[in-house]
Length: 286
Image 1 (tube, rainbow, N blue to C red):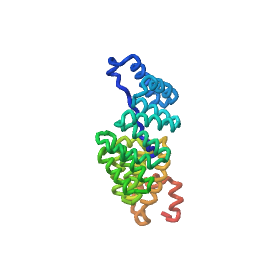
Image 2: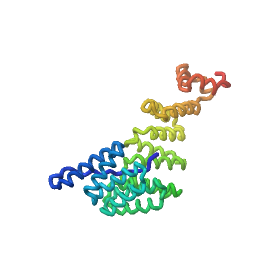
Image 3: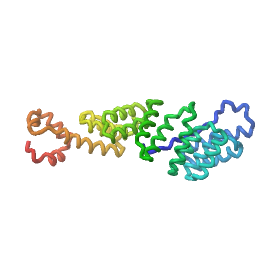
Image 4: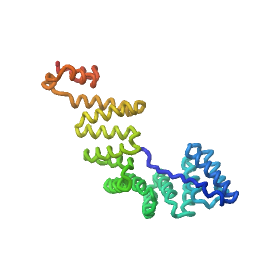
């Protein structure tokens, strides 16, 4: 997966607003509007509103967390670290803020600091996003070239949340690189049961693994579906290239070719494209 960062934005609930002071209500409004703008990637408006919320209610952990993330997206990393640390100092149980701080350290290549913060989050046994922490720790272990530890963290991630598809994809890639193709295929298939079904890379990795297992028909079907579903994606062109390779790998020899029906020969020619067929097999003289 391209992105490691797992950012947590926290909303204040408005259900208890009747018991708030006028100042607190204004802070909540600025906070909610700023967070909405942050989600919409309108970072300047988000910063303006969250700063006003912080002025009205400076001791709020959640406001500092989202303010820190606004600075993160505006690439003001010192300010981001300051507010995330503030969020943690105000509420040491704010594991979302800790996760964001660790992700900031990761982004800044302060890997040892990131690891220390992530490991601290694991001590919060009631934190509901522990599977993501294990995933991030796996990425760190890969930075340290410790594939064994990375594998263990990923297994723990998918054990906690079986449909966590980024964990399955990374596990699949590790198994595929180790030539454990059956295990890799299982993880890629599990990944497609989750939200990664809408990510073309997931389908492509599954197809590549099927090719390694010489299950060409299944691989071809997977690539064909990828081309149809993600026709505007760069993976569509890659899928077409792999389909040509499959046609060549699964091409029958001369004796087998002679026993094929004309309709079967036609299908093979169409799959390989006529020009590619002539180029690859011009010496066969069928």
